[in-house]
Length: 154
Length: 154
Image (cartoon, rainbow over all chains, first blue to last red; front, side):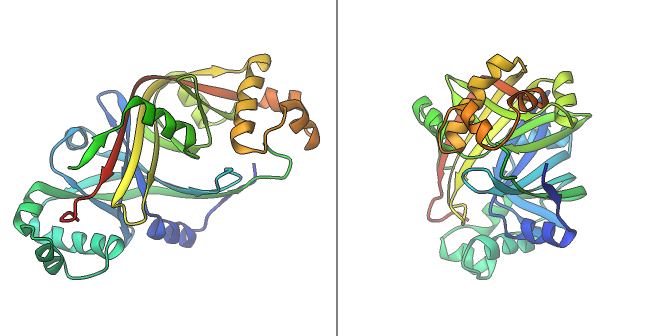
C-alpha cells in the first residue's frame, strides 16, 4: 500500500481547512456517524449543536469519540484522511461559548463580531446560547494518511 | 431545524452517486471511522479491502456498522446526508468476488471486464483475489436528510 503517514504540520493544516468532519459515537450498542461543521484550533476540535437529541444523551454515557476528515478525487485514486480519537467536553457556559461561536462564524461566514452577526439576523443571543452548546474534542491520538494509488492497482 | 427527510428514491440515488462513504465500527471499546470507495446496488453496499488489519479483526467480533455519505456546500449552509445501520458479511469466495470487483471497476474506472482490467496492469488475478475480500453491508435501517439553512440561522 502506497499510503504515507502525514507529518503533524500537514495533519493540522488538513484539519484546519477541511469543511466537514464526521463524528463517530457509540450509543446504545450502535455506532453512529454525524457530519458536522467544525473548527480546529489550538489542538482542539469544536462544533456547535443543539442541547437536545440522541447525540446529547449518548455523550453523557460515553464521551469517547472518533472524528474523521477526508478528501479524495472522484475515482478514489488519491485521498487524504485524518482520524482523531478523543474525548468530548460540553461547553454550555454562555460567556465561554461566545468565543467558540465567533471562531465558527470566522470559518463559515463572512467574519464579523458574534453580537453583530446575531443582531443582523434578528435573533436573540440569549435564546441561541440557551438552546445550544459547544462540543469540544480533546484529541488523544491523531493520525493522517495520504494515499496515491499505484498504476497497477485497482 | 429545516432538515427534511429524504424519500427512499432520493436516498438510493444519493447512495448510488456519492464517491466516498465512511464506515463506522466499534473495535476494542473505541469507535473507528474508515473512508471507503464503495458501490450501492440492489439495496446493499459493498467495497473491496485487504484481508488483514485491525478492521478485519474488528468485524469478526462485531459486525454491526454505521455507514455514512454526505455532501455539502463549503459554508455548510446546505447539506445532504444518508446514514445506514447494517451488518457486514465478508465475501471471500473468489468466484463471487469477481462480480463485486466488476461493479467497483464500473463505478471508479473506465468500465472494462475485470479479467482484462487485471491483465492490463500486469497483475495476478488470483493473487489479488487471495489477498483481498469484499465487505457486503446489508442495511437494517437507512435514513436520509436534506438541510437548507434558514436565513436567520448561524
